[in-house]
Length: 382
Ligand code: PMP
Image (cartoon, rainbow, N blue to C red; front, side, top):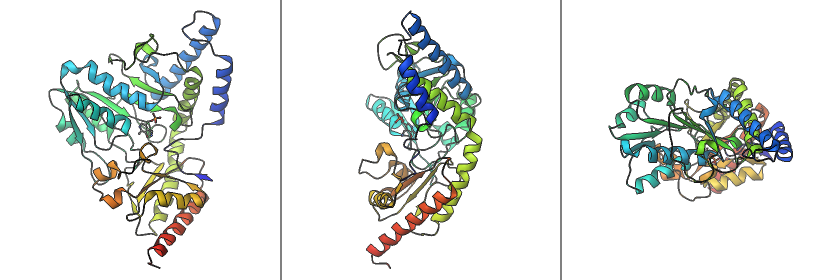
């Protein structure tokens, strides 16, 4: 089987697997315990926080460990909205966010907040000016993802953050960085980002670990009550093996970012050029897209059926994003981009990794070609 679903989950680095297992076996002490074993775990936690902070270019005190980006996004959005509710009751996000952000805003809207959902253009991008124009006196928070998980579209978060902080410094800026980190450079220092979420398993790290960068001086209402761990923002005994594994994966992701992006971009270009051979496929990921995601629709074709045709030939891809692929509805992201229902129901996502080679892309293209031929035959076109 050839795996082309790296935007859904990545195979962890062998080194990460080894580290997680070693830490799990040897360092089971609770960092809150006062004895030697506890202290050892505590030291690992400090070190992991330093490594993550260095890779992100922030201070160790600004890193909160969580169970993954879903939790990070919930903590960011609900935690900030609740803490700063006194400033106003207006929030802004985009129509194309991941469900872990989108559903937070939908929930807050039901609780009486006013939410502006920014539209996107046909490539899936918001306009920076639209976002700034949407800010009102009572706006508390703005969330914009860095890279879209379905289409790979890159949002102009750096420009937006810089202008937001100049023109409306009180508005809190949250960025879901899950699909961008390690593939699309982003300076957290220079882009006015106050809250930034990551998930380890998208970066060759372990499942069940993530982080939220919370800019110094910003305060959040915790979503859970419990002990005082993670600055009382995320109580519960720390998952030391997963956190140490994540720190390693994040460091490796950052170190190899440029080289990885170059390699992935070449593969992506090859794949997009190859897809042009079949006019019935509509490729969505345009120029402003991340190097690891290629997304196309095949109107009139059920995405799931196409996925299984590829699977029969040994290639694993996604329909929409993994988190929403089991829902029968058309893609909210594609609809927001102006796609019709048939187009929005037939999205296929191919997501690449640095270890893929040009030959793998050729083989995948051949399998896509065979599947398209089969559909054409079924439709009686050939
Ligand atoms: N944001 C984006 C952009 C994602 O792609 C994902 C994972 N599909 C998440 C958030 C949530 O991450 P997790 O499922 O690891 O909590």
